[in-house]
Figure: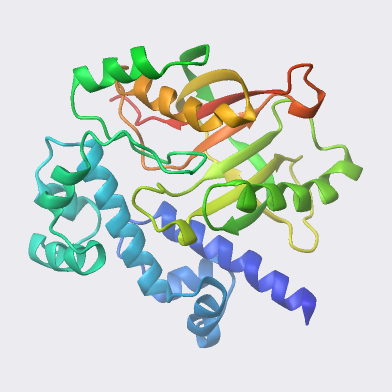
Length: 304
């Protein structure tokens, strides 16, 4: 029974990932179930039991959160274009669903959020930045920059990773237990090492409720590795990324994310609708100053 419960959770994670990667398509329940090797008969109940919401509700919420992110990151795009691009059949249906979910209209939401650079206690922003003018950006860069940062546009490889997923606020109470569990499995197999450990942040905590944010603790593994117990396997998309390199004490990681996105908003590039991730190059406990050496990797849309 214990194995079955773990297996269900891993397969539901696959279904969640399938929905995320095809969020703009009109997915059938059969497609989603098939992506995780579930039969249709019990999939609806299993998904809800593991995730806490139905597959349809999860898909609708992700579409609304994607739309909210695009409202903020693309302030010149009209709302109908955003609605249609996020899988809604009409602007009217989108407006109704948006108001029910966020308690306000899309236009009011955009006006209230643009330019708000104050962050809560999360460790990371996810896909989008929320700055609305060069003045705000430059003030953020000049007044808030405390960490040395090197930034470049790089073609990142696709990573095959083992992972453990936790759902909750992007803080130590969520992230640390995931890595503790992952390293118990990875350590004896000598998988850990510089440039092999990642954190994936699937959601934007300014849009997604903290208790629903998805976090994956990941480690790169050889192709063909067979996962065990609660460990699952997935691929991290390769392609063009804005890679912001930092060496900071752990208390400054949130500040590093703010600086990375402040720089990104002046870079002339556009975010892709994929999750950001952190790529680690050391163990802070082994650094003489206790610093974490890591990259914040922001996915970019391919330039046509």
